Length: 348
Image 1: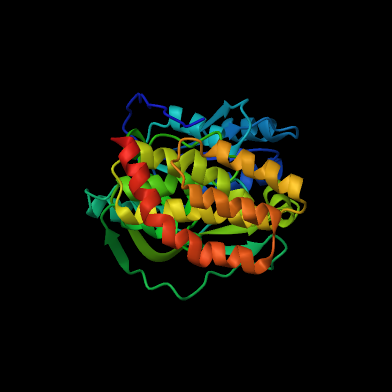
Image 2: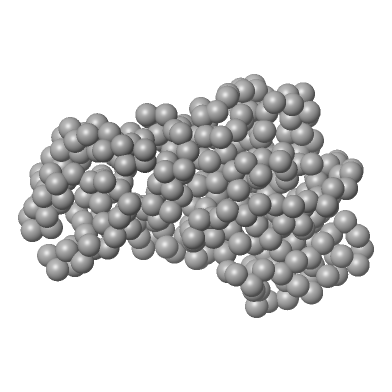
């Protein structure tokens, strides 16, 4: 389901809306609250969104509410970070929106610095910095000293193409500060995505909006080895995890927007290489044939090549490494221009 939410705001004079989804995060509520309060910002609200917690997260948030009227509590019954963040966006009143994860850590004065960049550059729609990844059992954190504080401003679609082409350059939501108006342009988080919904939204941001980068660490992302996301990553190859983002977000974006050729090249190359990769990782002819049928159902709006389908059927029958490598390194690149032309014509 592609999110098409339009936000209607009740405007009040306020700088920041900090949105914090919570799922069984009772142990982190107070720390998350204090980390925002210590940012040395004055005009803000904190919107906790409980997402079907089974611990005492709600009680902890209500305790904080009793001491600070700037803290708001909402419930979202639809499971997932995307739906929870969207609930926060529906109620956000600040000029700037910041997405924070309840168990992460933000460095001192990060929000003030991000806001200063948007204030100095009114044509910039969002700004982001760097994140530091750590395991949860890491010793006491010291902020890295390799910040240059250099500010790089790029017009659309620079960052969108950068993030689409190289996932290693993508940072998490707490590295960003958005102008609230941005969500009228890019829409909300795609609730049909169980993972990668933040990446999908930020690629839309980079394609449609002007974005600045500051070489400054904004927050720490803690990896929990037993978290549901980490378990999925261990048990499933990355290509299977990224496939829904391409077919449910990037492909519809291509069909609904004028995009540069580079976006099309990356999109269709990734789609057809991914199909080959997933077939290559699947054991058994019948299982590969079943998977191939499902994958082509996922991209039923895409105009494909008979030669692509023919070679993939060969891969189903003869799943050898050299067959797969020839497909991704020679077959797909050779047919890619004609596939792009065929799909462009279908949009007219």
